[in-house]
Image (tube, rainbow, N blue to C red; front, side, top):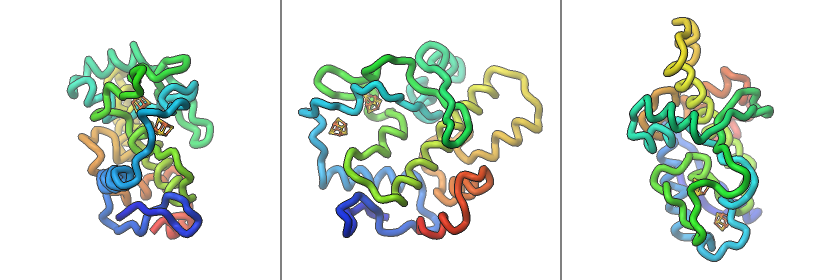
Length: 203
Ligand code: SF4
Ligand code: SF4
């Protein structure tokens, strides 16, 4: 898949294949932004210095913590706070901050750039098509929910049935973003986040 400007001047993608992975989408974004760079260094209204939430996913936390379960839980306890996602009706973790993201420097450099949250990797501060926004939001929700589930499994003795339920989320215990978008869309349908006819429009 490839990102491009559509006839309305919005960021859009050409097509999704059945085997497109999340990693493919992230690479397509990087390629698009290389050709259409954003003026981050001189940006006075930096998106990293706003009051809005920085949502944190499981891969980001595990990478920052070198895949050490104890360190991951410490990071969650010390740096994050739970926030309800009322749109999707689940809890997620966000940075415990007032304004600036903890990882932005005065010069607008992200100090965890290689491990930054997926939500930051999917963000483009230009008008985006509806279907790009749907794909972005479903990927983000799946990985954000995965951190909640992983953290609960790390710290609580929960029933086998609940563990089985949590593992339906394809991002739980994933080692990266190389999971099939199809698996995320299947999960989104099961969760009632996506309807059949909406899904057809994404391809
Ligand atoms: S991505 Fe953020 S920092 Fe970069 S130009 Fe857009 S708003 Fe500014
Ligand atoms: S993690 Fe990095 S890219 Fe994301 S909001 Fe913070 S400084 Fe910005």
